[in-house]
Length: 103
Image 1 (cartoon, rainbow, N blue to C red):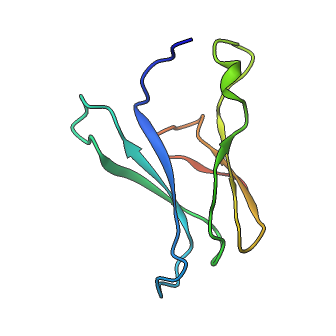
Image 2 (image 1 turned 30 degrees about the vertical axis):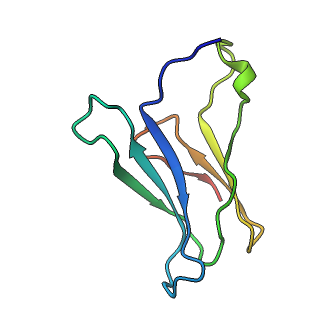
């Protein structure tokens, strides 16, 4: 099974132990080598709370569902280590500028 090359990736970015009092955020990075924004952060989605420590994100649909038109990876699940919160991020509406679906 071979899927298309990723054009963007999502990275959880945390502030724990940095002395910065800001919410963690989800960075959207352009990884399309043909793009003028290649390897640049193109969007930051701050979480609504402080001191979460986002960790080990996952999808709402597994990779074995590739090719199944009834399944869509349109939500990114972001659990937090410190706060025990779980955020659900909508990446389906605008993949380049995700937004909080539930948090």
